[in-house]
Image 1 (cartoon, rainbow, N blue to C red):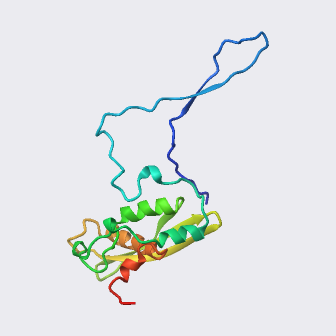
Image 2: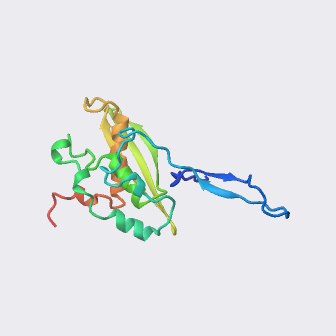
Image 3: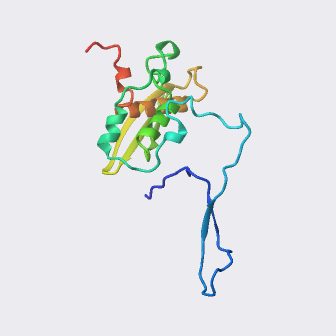
Length: 190
């Protein structure tokens, strides 16, 4: 399976122009590369990324670091601003970190990571379990972690119980890399 990477361009596309008058009688080809001016947008037309833990502009693109560095960074303490307090979690099985913050932090520390749903299991007891795999790629290889998340199909808190189970599984798989793992054991005394 061939992997593809999405990268956001850092600069606007370049225009090449070859129509210049020749200064000598000798035929030469001249190509001038000019950058197009960035488009001006009205204030308030785009959402600000400065309030995110990891701004979109700061995220590197491509696989540029060895796994040991990526895993070391994923084990760093998570900013308190993105952690859900216990009062905002309906149960102990609810994710401690919202999936979109885990996604953003993974993209920052482990560019080139990928995730996939490995299995969706419906039980006779009215529950759904999702198995999710997160793969982190480094310059020296790749490593993956899997986790399962379960949600009740009759729970009124969830508009989509499968999505809730997937979020729990994704966040647990990230924790298996060390991302916010200490939050799951905060109540335990060392």
